[in-house]
Length: 368
Ligand code: ADP
Ligand code: MN
Ligand code: MN
Ligand code: MN
Image 1: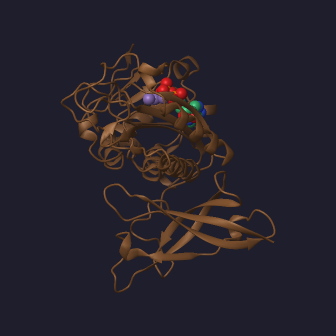
Image 2: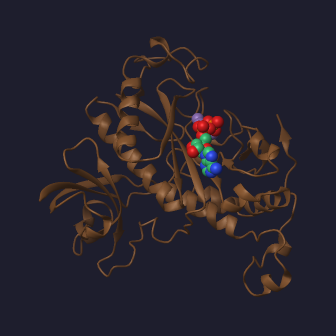
């Protein structure tokens, strides 16, 4: 038997952005454990804004596990928080989202490294050279001496943990970086994103560096980019059948549900979605081919391939909860019946009852 270090990780009850929490439990197993073998556990919810002191027990239910490359016999255990009666805690944003393993998500997580309240590489007063050469940049004047070391170590940790890390790049602002996570299904993709965030935060401890996830940490007065979490998505139907009619119907649903999307796309997004810095403004919905100023960017490959492939929702921000974001995207997609759905099928409940109400063409595509 081997003693494994199980790191139970969960989201706390802070609003509007939950913090990651974790604590270690030692358990013996003959080999690397299966999810089903991991016990429920508990914690003091009165210390995480998840319970009153007089009745403080919350339950941790393991929902995904990953080898922990930074610890001997370590396991990273993503958990949902339950109430003592076994129902989802109000802070549990994972339990009730729609899921579908054939709907794929690619999250592009942007963030700033911070030291002493400033982006890594900023002088103590004033600003470094203006934006321009930092994005995908190389060289000490662009990325300094520390950031790339952390970013590379994080990439290795994610890959060794079995996370579908898809790439990294230095971003537009000094001290700003991005990594991409791909997953099949809303829960799997979002579990991997939360664990990747956890690994970055934990790794940064030893460098004396913080991660600032805020979408506009430098404010709106200055000409520095904010941080997003562009969310790329595709259903099996979009990848294999697609077509312009289905695409326009999808965009109709996204426009109709704009407010519900924005509500879960991260706090303070009005500071970031201004229409500047490669964003659309927060109260406008638009889509455009290769348009980084649209709410939804349609890749050239999508149009060239008969409207098949994936789309990029550029509105979610860096502090957004990937469970809520992916869940909302599936919800809007599911409001759209597939082209060719008959009236009889609609009447039987197999299609959207809202089909007749949906305007087909919602905005003119902007090419460029
Ligand atoms: P950009 O910076 O040009 O917007 P990135 O390369 O940073 O693009 O991100 C593209 C994302 O799209 C990646 O996270 C990738 O996993 C994701 N992606 C690619 N194909 C699909 C697909 N079929 N469905 C969902 N996501 C996809
Ligand atoms: Mn990107
Ligand atoms: Mn980016
Ligand atoms: Mn993008």
